[in-house]
Length: 106
Image (cartoon, rainbow, N blue to C red; front, side):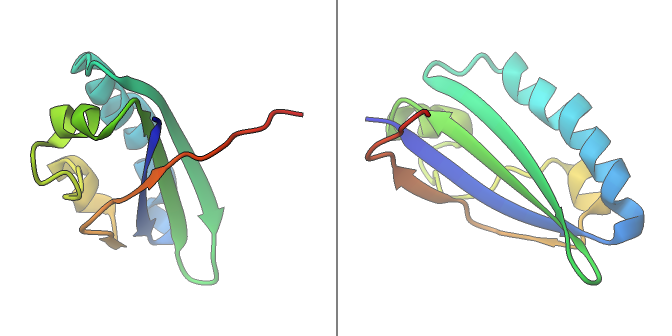
């Protein structure tokens, strides 16, 4: 089974580049340094909106036990380090988890 962990955060347009850099250079690197068994992929996406910028992260794990190895038994709890909280306007307090049913590559 594969589990996708989906999270959203929003910044002001002025903080978007700062948050993107933090996400690329600190948050993702810090997660990689944890060497979580069962973490397979980390995706980062960005989308400008009318008055804010939305960021979405999707993490791919082997199973829920691997997610728990990342954040603990309360596995829906978001992971947002203090530096990221400082530049985010708002964010999901909980991450959503989906069981991957099928993936097709064309």
